[in-house]
Image (cartoon, rainbow, N blue to C red):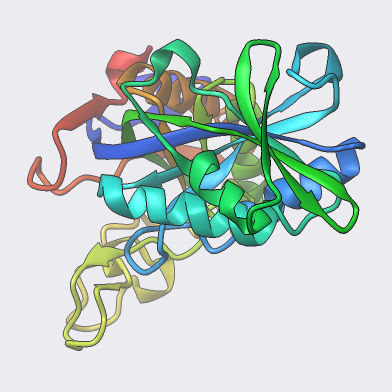
Length: 298
C-alpha cells in the first residue's frame, strides 16, 4: 500500500515482552526535573549491551503532579523483573537522589501488575534519620540530605510491557531520512505510555543478532547498508534509489500503545520529501510474541 505516495511494505515489526516501570520525577523547576530525567535514562538504548532500555515518556505540568511541581515521567524496561528492580535502585539512587530538589512518585497507577519496594529500600540512605509521611494519599519517605529532604514514594508499580516495536525510514538521501526520523520521534512523543530509547529516539546503526566475532552480541545489518550495495559477496536489499535509512525503535506499556506510536511516527515521516519507503525489522517470528503489521496500522 501507499501513504502520501510512500510505499508501506507488507511486513511486520517483531516485538517482545519486557517488564516496565513508569515513574515521575519532579523538581523545583522544569530545568532540574529534566536534568534528573535525562541522567536517569542514560545508557539505556538497548538491552543488547545496555543494563536496561529507558526513555522519557512525557512532561507533566505542576497542576498534575502530587507535589505541585513540574516533572517528567520516565520509563525503565528490562526482560527480567529482578534486574529491573536493580536498575531502579541504581538509577534513582545515583541519578535522582543526587539531583537538586528532586522527588519521585509512582506513575504506573492502576496499570501496575506488581509493586516494588524501591522507595522503601532507598530510604535507608538516610542512615536512620529518614521518616515516613503521606502526600495526597501516597505513602512517601523523606530522606534528609544537605539541601533539605529527598522525597520518594515507598512503592513503584511495574507491569509487563512490549519492547522492540520499530519501523525503518528509507529515503533518497541521508538528510531526508534524518528529517523524517526527527518528525517521527516528535509525533511519538504525543503517544502516552511509550518511549523511543535510542539517542534522540533515532537508531543510526541498526543491527542483526549475532556476529562472526564471538565477543559481539550483535552486528551491522548489512542487508540495509546503502554503502554495501554492489559489494561482492554482500546480499544488500537496499533499492538503488535509497541512500539513507534510519530506524525508530519503540517500547511501551503494551502492544496497543506501541502500535499507536508506530502509526503516529510513520504518518509524520511520510510527509517529508525524499522519503520513499517504510519498512520494519523482524526475525520471521523467532524473536518475540508480537507481530505488528505495518499495513494493518492504517
